[in-house]
Every structure is written in C-alpha cells, then in structure tokens.
Amino acid sequence: MTRWERTALTFISQTSDWDRNRDMTSFIPFSISLLRELFGAYISLQLDFEDAYTAKVKAASPSYLNDLILNPGPVVTLLEQHHYKIIYWPQIFEKNAFDDLLQALSSAVILPVKGPGVDALILFGWSEPQTFDASARECLEIIRGRFKEILQQSHTQRTVNTTMSRFTAIMHTIPQALIFIGNDGHSGWVNAAAAALLQLDEPGEQPPHVLSSVMGQLISSAENKEDINKAALQLFISPENKMKDMRWEIPGNALSVSCMPVDSIGRLWEFKKI
Image (cartoon, rainbow, N blue to C red; front, side, top):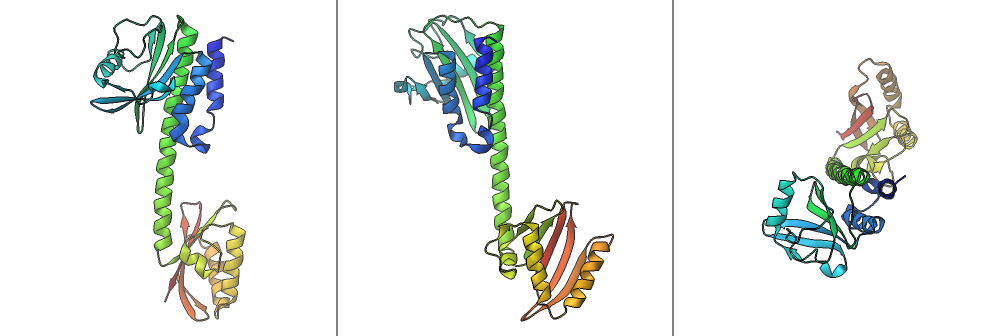
C-alpha cells in the first residue's frame, strides 16, 4: 500500500461519522490540519470566496497567514481554466494567481471545494518538490469526493432538522390533542395538548406501551367506557382502519375522538373538546 492510499484510508476513517455526530463548522479546518500532517505539507489553508472582491485565508498553517485578503479574480480565472478540477503544480510558477503566498515553495495542490454554503478552495504547499503520480491523484480525488459527500449530507441533515423543528413547533401549538402510535412497536409521539390530557411529564417521543397504558387509563375513567371499547374493537377489525368523531365522556370533559391510519406506518389519534 502506497502512502497516498494510506492517506486516503486514514482521512475516510477519521471523518467516517462527522456528518452525523459532529459540528460541521469545524469539519474543513479539522480536515485541512489532518491532511497537512498526512501529506507532510509545509503550508495548508482554506481560501473562502466571500464576494466578487474578497477572498480570505482561513484555517491556515502557518497561522500568520490567517485573514490575509486576496483578489479573487485571478484565482477564479485559474479555477475556470481547469474546469474546477484539482490543480497539480509539481513546480510552482513564478507568476501565479496567489501573489506572494507561495514564495519559497516548490510544489502545490489546489482543491476546489463547493457545496451548500461553501465556496472555497483548499491549498497545500511543499517546500520540497513533489511528484503527483496516478496514486497521488486518485487519493486527492477520493478526498475531494469525501468533502463533497460530507458537505451535502450535512446540508441535508440540517434541512431535515430545521423542518422537524418547524413541524414539531406547529404540532405543539395545535389545540387538539394528537397522539401517534407506530406500527413498528417502538415509535410514539404526542403534542403538548396530548401530554396534558394524558398527564405525561412532557410532549414528544413516547414509547407505545406507555401511550397504550395512559390511554387505557383515560378510557377506564370514561362514563361510556363500554361504548368506547366496542368502538375500539370495530376500529381494529375495520377495513378502513379509522374512526371519526367518537364521543368520550371523560369526567368534566367531553371529547370527540378520531383515529386514522398514517401511510401504513401507524395511527394518529385526535382528541377535540366538545
């Protein structure tokens, strides 16, 4: 196994669960630091394209390069000329798009990184000449692919989390008590009104056996519990698998109760005060 192959495997291993379990704001800085060590590079940095006039250096080593401002125009032209593919410089040109940033270095690699919320490049520079053979190029393509994968997965996860937070906030403000019980035997959920009705400590995720127990207690307290039990039996044998506006006479609280299937994954119960 070549050192480039080991580098690719190490990078994948070190970032294997980052998109699920860690703060994404630190992903690129961590990756740059890790790769600089694995590559044995002298310089490593992230160049963010903030706008049409500003490109700022971040996550740099040596650290004195941080916050250096470059003109993005020549750099973007360079990337366009290479169709935003990885750029390999076994020998750094005396005149290049990075001005004096690469002085006294022999070789460099430029990795464009573009994804949701990210428009940047990552640069590594060596003081000793480097040869970028087929294994080196394959390694760097794998690493670039991993960057793209994690940035996309992170964006997707953030979108899901935002949507779920919004959905949950809306469900908790609905005055009707809503109870979902999954067919898998493991998932259950109640909104704030249902938690209050069932005297649960808090809304949100609840084990189905807990929900079944407290709903059973609610039925037992009803003045028309025999009618409710008969309706429940009909519900479970009904081909439509649903019930609409069943009256539950709870002491001091008359309720209209409906139950409907949810895409074959469970049942949603709705309790409305009459």
